[in-house]
Image (tube, rainbow, N blue to C red):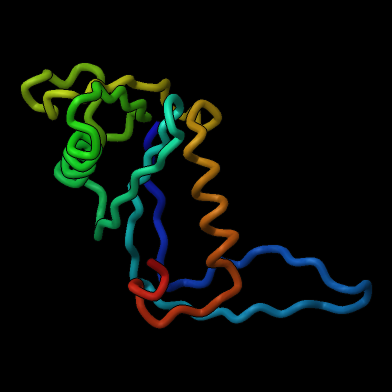
Length: 140
């Protein structure tokens, strides 16, 4: 399962617990600079994860991530399930355009519930929420 998540310097506000009658405050700053995290989870085997930081999303970046997955274990055949975003290779992509040991499984559009790696994005937002960062490198 693979997906990408956008992160940036604009603050991520998350709910927090507090005493009754107290209103919590969270730091907030509007700075528009974004990065993207490509991530994949292994659903069989050792349950490993693979990630790649990128400055954008495109077919070239998606292909670079597939190459990274491919080289992690060159002996295995990797089935990567992706949604049908325009910057993802899909099941119709010819095999000569993909790394030799990667196969694409296209998911139906607008179905994040079929992608367990979506939960990873929520965990990341929990971790970086309510904190101000000066650079994207600090978040990464």
